[in-house]
Amino acid sequence: MSRASGTLRIGAVAAHFGRDLDRALVKLEGIVRDARAAGVDLLVLPDATLGGYLSDLRRPDPHAMPPALTEDSFEIGRVIAMAGPMVVCVGYAEEAVEDGQALLYNAAVCVTGDGVLGRHRKVHQPAGESLVYAAGDSFEAFDTPVGRLGMLIDYDKTFPEAARSLALDGATILACLSAWPASMTDRASRLPQDRQSRLFDLYDSARAAENQVVWVSSNQTGVMGGLRFLGQAKVVGPGGDILARTSSKGGLAVAEIDVASEVLRSRRVLHHLQELTPSAYHALPAAPEVAT
Image (tube, rainbow, N blue to C red; front, side, top):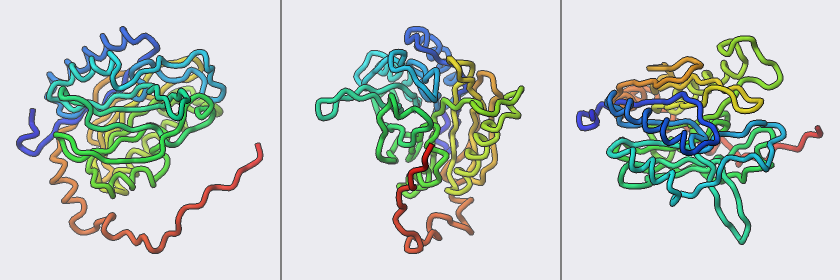
């Protein structure tokens, strides 16, 4: 591993994962093995790696949900065991009981072989996701062997405040785990020409450049029900430059970067976080409801 020299090898995964947990674990073993052979220090897997994403975003079937897991589940334990010294971010459907009510969250954990380092529950919910998932309510950075890190889950990155809050909490690496599909209303014949494909890339570069951080974007590929996922996993530098990326097919994008040095260099003259003027902003009001 290269972290001792200050340089990290960061891997972003584009891959398809469905409902079969056993099959997912076998596939994960291969991905982690390949990442380890490539010297990867931080590996970011897609949203819903363990159990797959929804098959219909507008009218999700509550009887065809991903299997519900907890941090103590066997499958999370297997990912921890696979990780060893590598830092690994992975998405899953988290089961929780709150006030006597069973809830399901679209969630992610960050682990090494020593256990769980950090966790995130998806806050922003598109289309009909709120019909089956509860929403998270915070963004919190945490310390890892590769530096201070924050996580987001796909639609979270549409909102600049999400990434900004993690950067203000000291994160210099932001991992965004996605199950991001092509447009459901205006599909293009080829994925690279799809409107959502353009937005996915735009958000990745913008969030990195706005906050002058390293951005690691993973995504699902293939098809789940009526959803066709974009792939396009990538590592983005603090200037918004794409350092490594995959296509719409499965793959591992690997970039080598001295995170601390590059973040410091990007902030040497223009330091977006220090030059922010919080007093100019009012607390954000809730948007008015729009009749549908």
